[in-house]
Image (cartoon, rainbow, N blue to C red; front, side, top):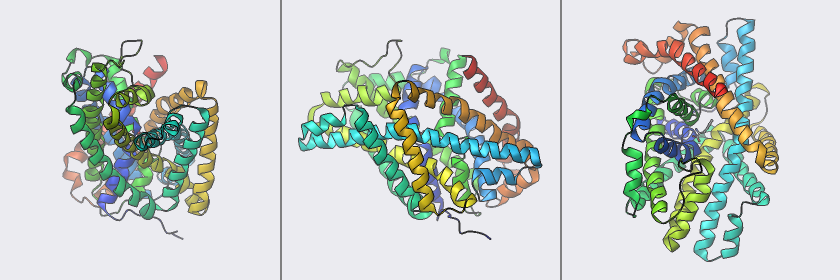
Length: 450
Ligand code: PHE
């Protein structure tokens, strides 16, 4: 009965794929500005604590369920259910993850399309083709539509090639390149005038901000989005993980890579912003905070690159390549969620499932492009602030309250036989049972009230 399922060929392959999913636009444009606007290193400190005390346990919950069930989220959650009611809840949560992640991909693809367009624009600049370069950064709906479609096509291409020959192969090529480009850019930007002011804004702690509840909330939201939690991405990647792997260790490495790259992105983005400031470019918004999100990537930084002449085009080329890579390794993990479900539960061929679901998501993206003004922010808000934490809450509930504790332990013991006596097993069950659900609920309530 077992249909042949994919499996990552090595620990390295899994780490690149999972950290590729985690490291995305969220790390590069979300984390650095969030940190600088919220007390610098004080935010970093809070973020590190939250990432390891809340996001890491939630990540472990998904990896454990996934590897145990060796199936997509719907089947996996149904498998650990105990009766008709929880089975029903399992279907709702699993399907909720599929819908949510598809919607996330539909807006993510638009922004990722911008990254591709800016990358090609820098290339055109370097070649001296000025009018295509200008069109590529024009922000027209046609450009958005074309590049969104190109980006979704790339995502479909990788996912339909399969777990090893698509996802793993591309992640192991792209992630090391990402790291290299990031390092080169950091070193270069730190040599420019104004960079040290950026470092100061980023790294000098303002501890008076630490008790601000909004800071905590925003750090927690950031950590959940950044680790791709709540929508079944980590669950499905966990389901392709070998039984010989030590789960607490590989989960810890994924969290470390994600946090590490976010922290490194701060060493690039903030110095770059202050270099821009030294060059007379506005880096604060009307409310007095640092410009964050899309405005940072498509306004502040391009203005900086423009002011740097020829070198600027090269730096822009490298930067937008970095962004495109970060986007693609995340988007493939998103598309894998509905595709694996269609393949496993509806016996669809992977290629057909990828094309069909990809086409649906591309259509959603086009609807958003055409109604950008009111729809984009709404979809972002509903999926990342509402749906993702709520689903994350249920994943924690499933693993800690519904699934049998001995089975959980049995699953983790595979690949780490000594785990019962480890620090992990002393702390994690308590966290995932009480702390995680309570904290997520708290964020959730606050988000709705604020
Ligand atoms: N973690 C990705 C980022 O930081 C986003 C993501 C969310 C990916 C949900 C997969 C699932 O950009």
